[in-house]
Structure formats: structure tokens, C-alpha cells
Length: 78
Image (cartoon, rainbow, N blue to C red; front, side, top):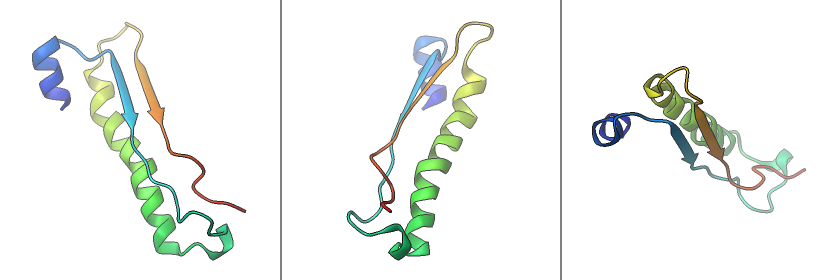
């Protein structure tokens, strides 16, 4: 997607990473399965990392670079 954006618009100045998942609603943190937590981390944290890995180098310097990250509601409840 980054390459297609550069091809079409010439540069990338803003990136909005709008993805994420939450845990099982209403399940207390102490009862959250490890596999569920790993899935949340893989999606919410690694997703942003992979996006920024390719977005940031494509943003011209020294212009202002902007990365906006939108995440879902709470991923765990106490």
C-alpha cells in the first residue's frame, strides 16, 4: 500500500493505523487465556509496528511526519 500511495501521490505525509481487537468482553484479566492475550498483542502492537516499519521511511524529511494510531476500547478488565 505504501508503494501504491507513493506512485499515485508522490509521497506519504500522514499514516493512520486504525485496527485492533479487544479481549473477550466481560472476562476479568485474571481469567483471560494466554493465547487470547497473545492474539491481542500480535494484532494491536505488531500491527502498528509493521505499518510504521514501511510508512516511516516513505515519509520525506524534514517535513512534519504524522502517524496516528487508533486502537479499540479496553483490552482487559480488572
